Amino acid sequence: MSNNILLDRLKIDIGIINNTVYDSRLTSLLSTAEKEVSKFVGEAVDTSNDRDAELVIDYARWQWLSRREPTAMPASLKYRLNCRAFERAIPPADSGDDDTDDSES
Image (cartoon, rainbow, N blue to C red; front, side, top):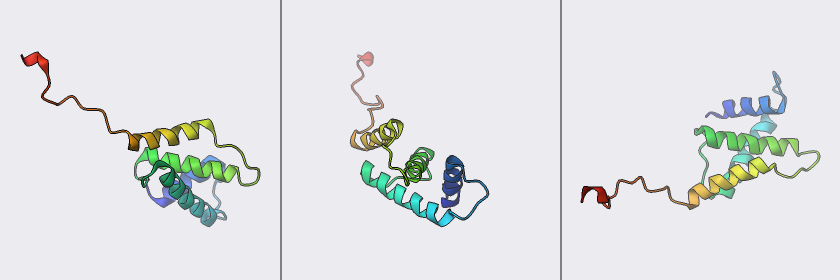
């Protein structure tokens, strides 16, 4: 997903419509959010993947909304970050294509 699309989606989420005043600040915030999410999950996130892009946008949204009055990270965001980190740590389940099928005996 391009940076402009990420920026537009973030602006919609935080209620900024038809205004470019904050674009450079929000672009920087998205870049920082991408780096922080990547650091948390232990690998680079792929913002061309909708799931990773939404994670970065939501993280940036939380940072933006917490800028004046720090708030705890929402539980749903923590959960999604942890799930993304565990996906990397735990190998995918076996597809069942191994040669141990007993039905042919």
